[in-house]
Length: 506
Image (cartoon, one colour):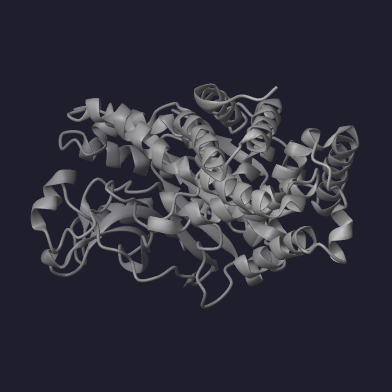
């Protein structure tokens, strides 16, 4: 049965939406199988490359509309002056993002129509998987990037199956995922091979992960989750009360044994600058012989120099001994492009734009293993979260997902954090304002956590780091090698092409 016109687009729209339900927190993997199988089926039936592009776009429209619906929540945070803009903005984003799977479908259909042998039973899956990965990579880089919910995230319910990301990253994991999910379109033998590969990957993943509990010798980090509602976070009347809650939570029993107290993104409800009177107050949350690491809006000695979204390291004297300024800001949410050249644009986001940090850093503090800070949105970017000057021992991730309520967004954000730990082979301590705060080991396992809308603390020894992973050493170069190793045998007709001797289309 072949569909044409609007019916094909409608099927693509629905199947893409269903595939989004395979992402956290639902993790309905069978729907990912359905979504990818339909994607391939629609591609097979497309009479032209333009039809394939439109069908792929419709699939992506449904997928990203459902997968990114949580953005709407931010528009309804009081005073919610722009709440009517939320749905059309999210729909518009889905319209744009849909062109990435559409590009993969259209380009490969053009190639298959020009060189018919590429449309064979197995070859087409390989070229589609490689093109899918290339499109995901483009989505993660073009126009500052939006690598949200890459296909490899469908395995987050089973940590052993994430371990391949340590070699080829989450994009490379997505290539293998596409081939596995699409296997039913190549027949029952291919399906059996795909199941065997999943089982084998699971066995290998379990084998390489050491037992949990060998992190007891590391310094203890106290993660503080204040559960401050976003509508009250910058309320002037509530500012002192919010700050006092953070300090009181930091002083819970065991405070004297803690090496680091970790607060969330912009936890300090005041703009901090050198010599600020707020610094002695923040020093109350610094443990003996330790540090407070807190998110804060930072300005230089002169207020007019700009404001940065930063992580500050504060010692017992109240001095800022180190800081990191966020490098990858959220377009329109944290900065307005060209705002310095066109000042009227600044009013569109109310408080204006943050300044862009210089680079990712590895910070070293006496008595604490070196770490790389990552602020909120930055953690979704593979290969771009640690300092290049030296390999850190751990990752600090501070975030504020209160904007998005109890939606799928914070759980998907956590999934990205877990994949970064796998890729880099580094543990992560994650403090979120309203959740999900977590201790993540170097294999992506969540060792402890505080769920959404919970107030509390986590005390946990820093888990050990792994030796540098292949992906942490070579990043997207190893991804390129992986893709070429799949693609070249598929497109070379002789002799390597005999590996895919399947000229008869299904």
